[in-house]
Structure formats: C-alpha cells, structure tokens
Image (cartoon, rainbow, N blue to C red; front, side):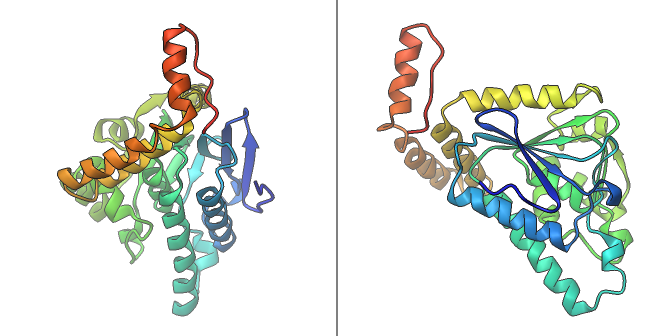
Length: 264
C-alpha cells in the first residue's frame, strides 16, 4: 500500500484499520490540485487491492477544521480551462471514493464546508465532534456543489432540506446535522476519535467479504428499483456461501467463541 502522499497522512492504527488524515492544516485542509491527485490515487489503489484493510477512518489535521472545501487561494484568477481540468481531477477522486469497496467512516473533527461536507457525504457514514459545523457554500461563490453534493445530500436529508441547505449556503450545527441525517452520532470533542475507532474496530472484526458485499448492495439500493436491487443482493449473498469465513462464522457461533475471519 502506497502511503507517501504529500497532502494525506496514512496510518495503520491496527492490522486492518487505516486512519487517513487530510493533512494541509495551514490551509484549513482545503482541496488543492495536489490533494486531488493524492485522493484519486489513494481511493483507486483500494479498488484494486484492499491490502487487508477492513475499515478506513477519514479525518482532518488539527482540532478545528475537517476540510474547508476547494482551495480558493489556489483557484484565484484560474483560467476556465485550468479550473475545469482541476475539477475533473476532483470528479475522478470522488468517483474513486464512491467505488472504494472498504467501509469508510468520516470523523468530522471540525468545520466541513463545501467540498469538505461533500467528502463527509461520500463516506459510508459519519460521526462528528460537537464543535463541527457544516455548509455547502458554493451558491454564495457563483458556483454550485460539484463533488456529488446535489446527489448525496438529498439522499441523506431529503430533497426539501437539501434545497434549503444548498440554495441558502447557510452554516448548520452538529446537532442539526445529526437530526437531519448528515451525522450518525455526535461525540464530545475530545472523545470523537476514540468513538469512531471503536466502531471501526467492530467493522474490522466482521467478515471482510461480507462487509464489502453488503456495502455494494446497499449502494445499489439507492440507484435501482426494489426487485432488481434484491436480485443484486442475492448475487452478493451467494458470493459468501463458498467462503471459509462463512464456515468459520457458523463454527465459532456453535463453539461459543469469537470468529477469526481471514477474508477468504
């Protein structure tokens, strides 16, 4: 697994648990062109080889900012062509994140604005610190969300709430994010990472093929009708039947011990 990224810090917390930190604290962890390259390459490598990583936690460097969105200092006076080229890179990065088979948890340690919030929405689910704040501010800047925000936000909070958030560009609190469906849990500021890692460990203890197949099936559920979604679920389910992990899971249950899954 490659880990020498300029704008990302990758740390194996345990054998199967990876912590990824958006690491531009002096620039509010904003998304610049280099981070676009780094994110695209990192997510793409996990599509090809999971390297026995069973859960990924993503957070921001520092104590106050998760990610401030696109780096507007870098974007100042960009030509149209360069802007669109950079955005194409961000598009590839977001699609690669969406296609990542490994469960992804966002640990929102501070403000998540514009592309930062879109990053949170692209994770499988998110926990947030009480100090976290959220906004999609693009319409206040003459643009609009372009990192799947208009797609993922309505799926998370409903279309009417999503329209209010995007069309006003107003900031909202961690409590509102929890009530509306952006966050799964609010944590005290100093316990956020402990709580996220506890949940990540629970996922890591489960059968990795099972978690990957279940994630794929749930993602499909938001895209197609019920009957065809169920057909996909059965195909995903049948992938587990011939695995050693299925045998181990049933055996461990009957032997009243913790299962030791190996991913095959």
